[in-house]
Length: 154
Image 1 (tube, rainbow, N blue to C red):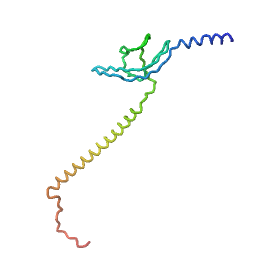
Image 2 (cartoon, rainbow, N blue to C red):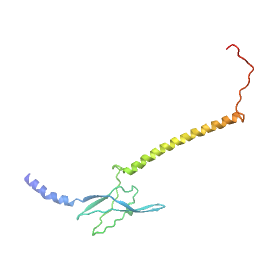
Image 3 (tube, one colour):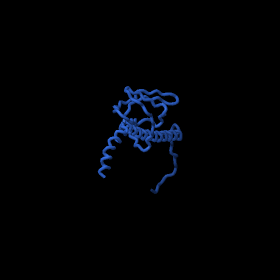
C-alpha cells in the first residue's frame, strides 16, 4: 500500500502537466461585411497563453459558423494544432440586460399598438354609424308624425 501511494505521488505531477490548459476567451466584433450569401465577422480577443498545450474556447459565436472559414492570427511563436467548432446545445442562453430590456419594450409597444388598432376600429364603426344616421334623417332631420288622437283619460 505504501508503494502504491508513493507511485501515485510520482505519476500525479506528470498527468497534471499533460492536461491542456482550458482558457475561456471573450471576443468583441471589430468588423462586419455582409454579402448576399452570408456575412464575414471579424472578432478579436486577447489571451495570455502559458507554455504547454492550451485549449482556447470562444463562446457566444454564431451557430451557423462554417468550420472551414475559421482563421487564427497570433502575434507570438505558437503552433496551432487544430481548430474545432462545437455547438453547445445544453448550455444556457445568456441574454444580456440590454437585450432583455429591448425585448420587454418591444412587447409593451406591441400591446399598445394592438390596443390602438382596436380603438381605431371602434372609432371607424362609430363614424360609419353617425354617417348612416345622417343619411336616414335627411337634411331637415327626423320628424315625428303628427297625430289627431287626444288622450283625455290619463
